[in-house]
Amino acid sequence: MVSSCGGAKPANTAGPAASPAATTSTSTTTNPSTTARQDVAVTGKWELVGKEGEWKGTVDMVGMDGYIWSVESDGSLFKTDPATGNFTQVGEKGSFQRLKLIEGMDHMLWTVESDSLYKSDPSTGKWERSGEGGGWARTIDMVGLNGILYSVEPDGSLWKTDKSGNDTLIDKGGFKGVTHLTAMGGKLYTIEEGTLYQTDPNTLKWEQIGKEGDFANINVMEGVNSFIFMIDKAGNLYKVDASGTKMKLGDSYGETTSLTTLKGKLWTVEGGGLYKTS
Image 1 (cartoon, rainbow, N blue to C red):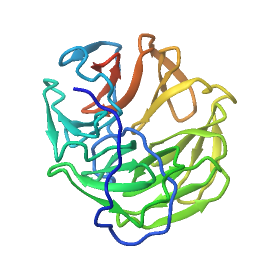
Image 2: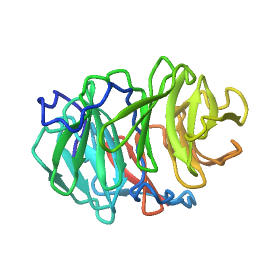
Image 3: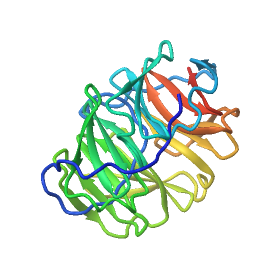
Image 4: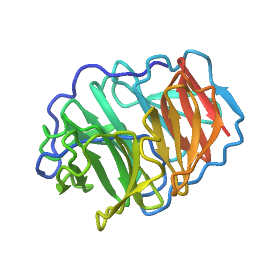
């Protein structure tokens, strides 16, 4: 199976009107938004799931509702059984072209494609544009938390978007230098100019976590209930707690292009293959 991005969704039936918003994305878990993300216990054991090379060119993936959902280079959505690696196409071929970000929240897939946010029902493959569209071109990353999508833009703006597509700017300029966004234990975590920060989305109170510049080389990260899993550009896998303490779990993840969690396991796409780490 191959995944990545291409053309663009045609203008579609829009959801409720909304003001333009920033966009973001991060692979996440599958639990309803009111449930804490399932923790992952990693012992360092990893294995290839499915056949080598089947995931060559995958754009992004997310674990949700017991399956891994991924988008290929031609814009097609696939559903993968984590137990066997068997996958099936969902919806029409090419429906997710120009994918930039994907997130799973409350049994729905949320995607940023070109400059718009879309909501898709993975059980049917049906999708609709969320909001008016056109405001998501600059989004760096996004994450779902408690039924809200949070996203960040290059100017440091933090946005929240509800499930009807209504966008609200909640902080202008406070997140400059951000490269990654995820959630852990009900809080937002960002890497800004190599430093990790924790932000309460309700009060916007923030604090630095760990040492300054200690997260400068992170390639991908994924938050669960009690930890954030990070892979740096050298291929090292770390588990990071709420105090910013890093524990190295492995060093063979140098070709990782996508990371998500599902059923208490870490899932990575590396060198065109799907791998499970337990």
